[in-house]
Length: 409
Image (tube, rainbow, N blue to C red; front, side):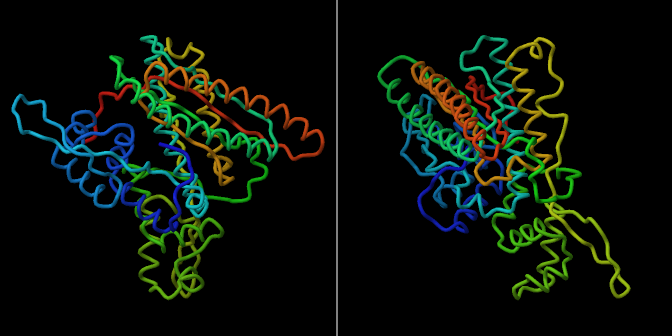
């Protein structure tokens, strides 16, 4: 799970279709994420993360290799005691992220839904890391949640520095592998958190009105997202329903571009089934009722990773920061400010580090926080001189990240 970063030039449509292939089945996203950290065979992946069966995982590896997401590195001998038993090793060629250009072209409500889904996933792993730190004394950097008063210049500088630090963390991951190759030290799995978004305190500037999300379909979010990314007409419908309320007939008449009304109606139905749009009104025309649709906000759940916390955990500073961050994210999602700008930063980076790599990452996060504090001071001077203020939330942390006992079905 990573922020939007620069990628090599390619069409945005090509990038969306590539992402749709990975998101189509949720475990493919896990395969790409984990194999970007370290090379694995299908059997190794299955033993660590599940996936139904080795054969099913192997099929996903083959699809991802065919479409350029994985590359084959070679072979390793199976640990069976019998010579000649080899497994193919694979490595991900890239991470599944939205680059700046692709992110900007997505409908606003889709960006908001993606960010909420991503934060829920981050929150689950973040809670695991905090619980582990409290119970076992695992090392890292405690979570910090900072509310800043900035101007547009300060926002741009902070977002830029978050991106720079993200790339440095990737370099630490590579350096750590080189260092441990010539030592007896083992790599430790870490989760590094970096989030920067616009606070709900700025909601008075929100222009887009979305319908409240009433439910989430009981399917993994990536599988809700994939059909939209893969289909131009679905994206066009969703974008239109972010701007104004429309019926099937009106969209077909004004924006259909030559496709059949049946094709438009089918996609409206699919978008509604996947909770991307909802009916907000019915209009009687020529003796029949016509549904009027609008794009939806994500449904905000209260019974998430932030709920049902044990007393021992609730009394820690790390949990207080986590709970505060969760509340601020939920408020910003409801208000619509989280993705009002096209450049928020949301990153939960899983990486393997040695002791030196961990120390370097923690030092980098400390320096980043100092930079942010100084940026707020300088922004204060510009605001006094007449710059328009805005409120930004930044969260930083680094925790040991256990794989967990729950495996994919």
